[in-house]
Image 1 (cartoon, rainbow, N blue to C red):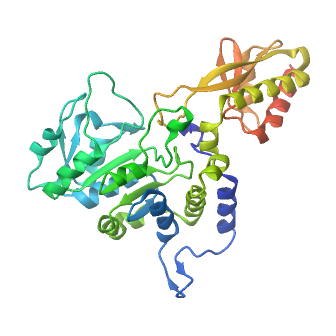
Image 2 (image 1 turned 90 degrees about the horizontal axis):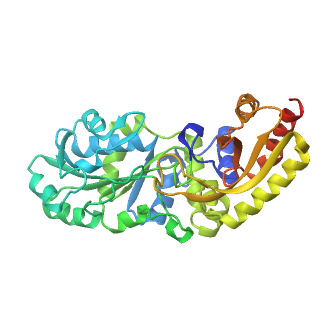
Image 3 (image 1 turned 90 degrees about the vertical axis):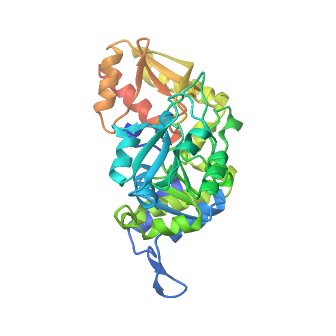
Length: 377
């Protein structure tokens, strides 16, 4: 999900849905049953509620815009309380304090970098408090002598004081990834079940869909967001909605989601299968390249990318190429500057191709390009 490389790949069905609505008219804002104007929000809302248990939902351009709209709608002209340990930078110098300022809320920091107690939130609540904000550390971890307050405890405080609780989850997990040996990452459904009034997440990270900012929670809050001026400014186009709807619908059958959604498939494929692919790819590459390179296969580790699962070294396997007629830097450059661009990484004098991320349909193209470059060296 490397942000520089476009984050999640879409499933084949999502791509087909985009092509269908891009090339023809659609029911984007048309209610077929009544024959009258409808709402573009309904296309994904039902699926999001079914998958998470939320009362209502809305999707906007990306999660940064979702955070901006949520804070603006719930806390403009008021105070928003957040732990000092959660004043994160999302990326590209986009920081929580900056979002607070732009949204019109006054940020109130509580606790310390490594420890925040419930009493810190409670002592900070005044008649001007509009929001209790919890930012999940989806792209970093603070370890050691630490403490943070869970969603359910914040909700109990919020319900008692009449202050809504909003959690920005970031990565957008819909299934528990621990079953595949990955670190625990709270799911959106868990936060909803814990009582969070509002939760937001990305559509193009661990969820495996298109770029989107998804907001879910209690109906009265989502209704406010739908009526907010930013809802139109940040609304999704028909192609993004089509891809997101199909991706969400795929999750209704978890086995199908694991097989069809590329991000889930790449994260959960057993390493034994990845090793077998690396061996097969290396054999085919040796046949194509002959004695122009030393080619092998080996175990390696990968990262999820996009700031997700920051502590996870994901077991993988790579095919490696050590060219004889040129150095590995030159081979990497030619692959990168060719058409289409092929991005590999250099380690220990070899060019590595991670078989967890290289798609089956791409193998022959990559082998052909490497063989052509080395053959013409």
